[in-house]
Length: 402
Image (cartoon, rainbow, N blue to C red):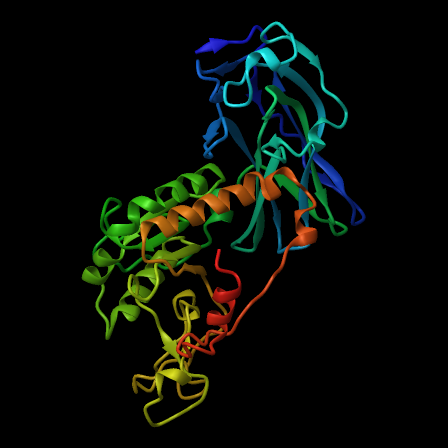
């Protein structure tokens, strides 16, 4: 490792939480990075700030990230966080992946020059934003994880390090108190019954005690590891669970019921987020019906329903007729306890491609072009998967093959 004469070490200075009397954009914190310890590997590929996690993305140097946490009692989806750069310096370095060193501005390695006022607006800066914000609701509290990225670079070999950042809360309602730090244990984990899992093993069994679980097959587990690392860096405690272990440990009329039993235990042990990593060939699915009936329903009229896995309290086949989700003959609960999503993949390369796109969206949206949303399209479709030729998912796939 080679060290710059001026190096960076991070120390986050968390200010006292402020009570504001009107909805507005208010600075709530200042984070400073002292010029103390920055190291760069011999290939100019790793820009490491001591104490931070490393973010890796293909065709980009690795950069450091630091998490800051904030919380407020209540549910506040309208509050947004942003990050203002108050002080930034620029270092000129001969980045080998960019262009030949002879084409770079003449400078002594590690020499500091004042940052240009519009430098952070250039399209070829990475990461394009100095922060990433994620929000969640936990036990009646809204919590925010702000991932701060003190080091950014431009393709011509300039490094920007943001030495002073101001964290701003926007759209704050009157009287809301946003406090720094993680939730206290009694706030973060509300009282719940004990888990009832017969088999609990953090390594290879049916893991409990995490807040984010990826349920998938052994064949796809390795492909999901980069996602668990990304979630860990951004404030979650993730784990991968093997569906075969779950089905072996939990009984039920079918695989979907066994999976739901595990997810109920996962919730009772403090879990909140579930990613079902696989299509119906990898993981069980639940078909539900939206009417009451006493006869068998053709699959063409049933709906794929992952809400079944998110609901930890309802009884989805109360009348025990093998038809789930009937509005009155069963007792489904439409208020989910878990946040559940599904990636309907069956091959590792599909998972890898999706994670790469997610990282690009999080850390370099629009490849640095912040106007990309002006050209974006948002679409949705019904779950008519069994209509092979006319189903909306077929039309979407045909028009958006990538």
